[in-house]
Length: 357
Image 1 (cartoon, rainbow, N blue to C red):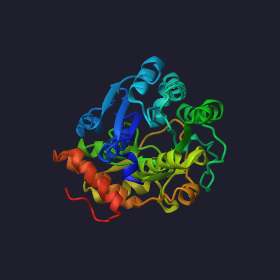
Image 2: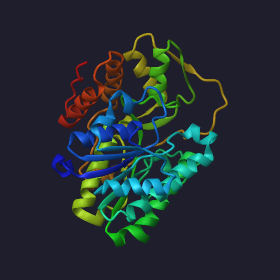
Image 3: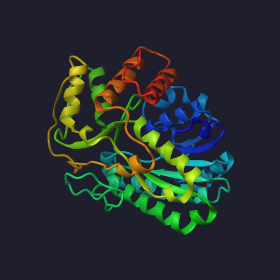
Image 4: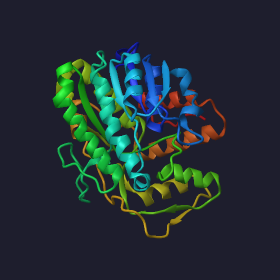
């Protein structure tokens, strides 16, 4: 990445009050970008947005729903963005079973609204729609999924994200190319890192159970996921955005940003590793039955490595260590925006040493 590219550049970011959105917003602001966030209020207490005082780092923070095209369009016009990054979503598989209508309207029509507002902006040069590794039709096979593999989804969340990919392709071919907006989609793995307090996510559930003196209950200990620190895919998104602006439509397509194959680990490996790192933490198998979730999922990031010169920097062990360090620093009431920036600097430097707490 080139920090000079982002200095003074206007970025419209949806989902800035969320976990991934918060990290990329702070990173962009640190590089000198003028970040205009648009999102619902944070859905958890505590949350990354509040704990890092993120609002103070942004040019604008609009609390709004991406399903409101009029409000979204006005906010995007006001920002006059060069780059649009779409991260707002209903992001949880299990929640999508409880709220399927909200999941589809947010993840599909919200994407339609964002792209419609982008094509009418008059300033946008590039847009990235962030989806998920779960947008692929999961065959439970041992091979990692490539960008050309078939899209699909058993649960409403996965299906809605596959739909968002189709929406992105339709807008790319039908509208955005003719107004000079280069658009790509980005698919990442199971992202971990400090500042995530979501429910039904393994690491936040683990840390919450430990903090509350409870035993963590695991649904699918043998499930395999492509685990990675949040900074890994975010560095991919930023690199991709630079390529879209500088090198054009050749990069306007789908991209995977996943970990090395060796870091696609079982859930049980994750919790056992966490238990060794955090004494007195415990887990047990949760009682059945459970809603369907994929058992085996891996991503092939060969295209990103070859064409974007992108590659993961931290191993899964390092990613877990950085996540624990962030959580422990937060419990010590350390200034978390500065601590987060320290971890970003450590990531960029490629150091293996732990960030000081």
